[in-house]
Picture 1 (tube, helix red, strand yellow):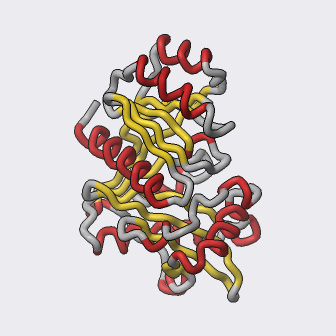
Picture 2 (spheres, one colour):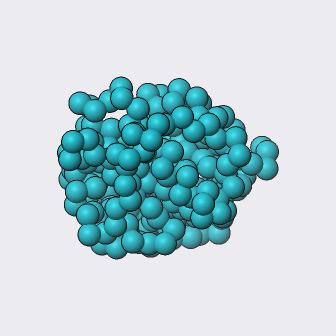
Picture 3 (cartoon, rainbow, N blue to C red):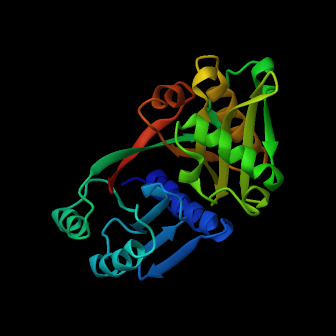
Length: 251
């Protein structure tokens, strides 16, 4: 693996720890090099077990799997790169038989292509904890999921944490999209880029992503990373992001 892949993996792991410390029901545990981060959202990848190395500690994974599975109904195991047979067997033993890939995309701050026009950028603003309910409702609409799936993930003081920046896009006064920047290890992780179905195709996703990036760079981030969905990947690649690693997820 290369240095930038190692760096953003460490940043992603730290971001999960920061989020679990901030969200009202967050739970976090460490066993050797293995980690468990539980947000209590009804989203498997937000209740996850992972390892800070490229060779997962299977004994620790087994212990953490027993704990996490008792806390939430939906959870996951994530490993960097291709999972070995031993990880596949461990995941199956704990009932995680659905397997997918998450592409990790990275871009240096100086290589990001900014194209949103001024009118689009004016539709995006920062939001704090006082608007967490509105943020969650808009996030759920963008992901076409029930708001209950996110639970209290973005509640409490999450959106007021220094390392976390939440964004809301509005069209004609109506909430239309969300974004989240999480700054750790001199980088920014881009999360929660979601646009309501009725507002898609007008550049809002790009404008929100650019807002996240511009503020993080101004705060000192020299690189950005994200795990792209199939729908969003072409947008991020047009902004300069490139694949550095593919992670395997079991849920």
